[in-house]
Length: 165
Image (cartoon, rainbow, N blue to C red; front, top):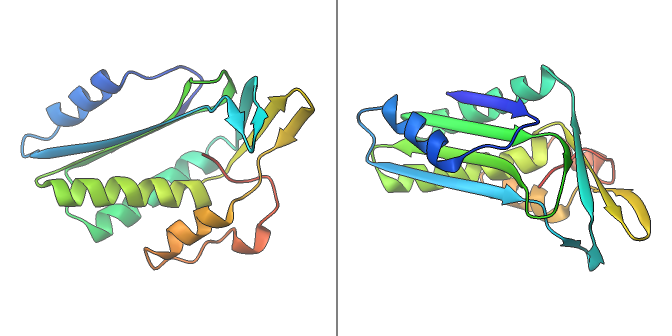
């Protein structure tokens, strides 16, 4: 398992190569990369700033990874999430999952991303021509998590500044 929160960009090829090298039984790797949009809710975005609580955030990501391992037979998981000021089209998050078979890899990758969007303690602030604004929780993020049979811890806090991608 690899969980990192960092300022620096990441290299998909290098991350997947490392994931595969550590797991000789890999038959499938599924990955997801989230990027900064240049338009959000119809408004142009010039930068996005991501904040987090060091230590707490990594622990939350490790718990998300553990929840995926309880559901599927996984050989490896990599979660990399960036923080700091990012530009449109910059990479924000990488989730890569290795398993013996593609079904487990695809399902676990999507589950981790759905769970991360609703439960990981990140805060996003967008800079727009109208000024800076916090990105609020989305009802669709909580709905995506519910389809896995999980009720969002943040459902009661909708409208606060604590959700991501």
